[in-house]
Length: 538
Image 1: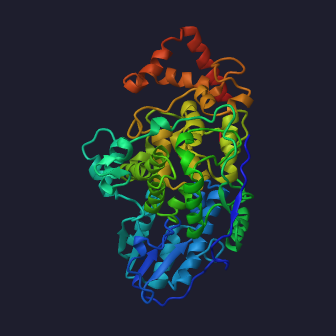
Image 2: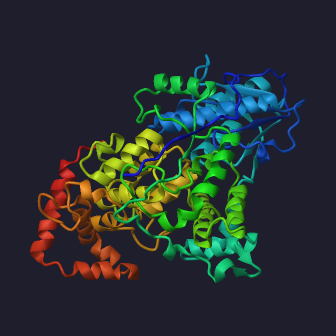
Image 3: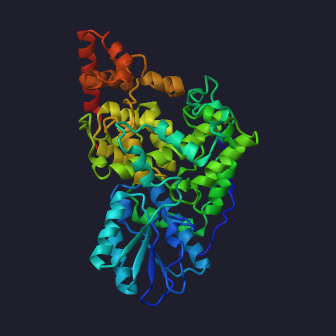
């Protein structure tokens, strides 16, 4: 196993304790609501801000860490970033009403704190940049209506497109596939375009970006950008360990960028050190190596410490200057300009009904070890273990390890969604929910994915080294050493054969299923049943 040293950068951040309320007389013109995933000084909500008449409102409430069992890493990330942003606002001279978690009188709900602020400041208008969570939007809208105060809801300018753009694209389409949207976004923005043609003469280099590390592994890897906790973050860590001590995960290795200055350092390091090999190895797995060639920028982007345009521009510049190959740059940009914009459009055009989708009628409870990592399946133990330590796993670990197992096991989609939303530092519902229900679980019946991402243990064996040290054999579907992924894969096909038979992209897998005789089918079904019964439920 290769070793990955940690880079500790000097935080370019305030060192003062968290900012509390700075006084402002009532009534105010605009009460500007800034949520934990809107930490952008260029936010549309702050446009036209007048310090003489307006006031920023921010609130830390336990509800946001408890509506799902939010991990310590995730809660600490949000709270630390919020407190740093609040300190920056005060340094800029912007009047601020900030409610901290430990403040006396905190109602610990967004609605409760907004109602208290409305009563105190008597605003003429509430101003809000569009949130990333349907539940939060409904909560704030209801509080505004109850108080009789107009809500000025503004577009989130962080994104390349609006929800209206995506709704227009989706109009009349039976299927909402990424590729068509992605090409439209390339043409609209001019990103990776040479005139009217895509750079390199093709739109997508995904087929070239599926390499594994081979038997020797990744070798020496670039150090990740990790940041030593400053005074504000240390205060947050103490708070989270006290207030949310029973929540999953650990904060002993917390090192995420919590300011824009830190996020910019992380972006620069990624483009210089990991982007050139990102594409080739973006799907690869390697036991014990957390960071590999991935960017680790999703959290900074989703909290708006980084803008999508500047991240895409940095990657494209690397290609144009010869610092990174086109395949790597296109693969990375597709995740942002394509995938990120696409899943946001899916979320906001499909909610709230999307949350209830369960096309495959999955009804099992989430195995309890998803919250601890205590399982004898090596790939799951590794992926969940690093998730609890860092609040992070890369996209293949999420889709083809933890997500694949939940799909094959038949876990209730809402339970899987609640887990993904809880454990990852970059989890905001607009991006997490479609990835979970649509991609990992096929619960939406094909709104996003053209087929279930069902695979046996052989896929995991091909992409990494976990199987070498595991007690299970991915080639076996029955017997004491049969890989649960392989057993559950065949059982999944058996259970859903009728449903999937009309899907042409499942034809090869179902053809292989036909080769199994009645005795084999019965043995697989029995082994799958025994495996499910042996897993402790949450």
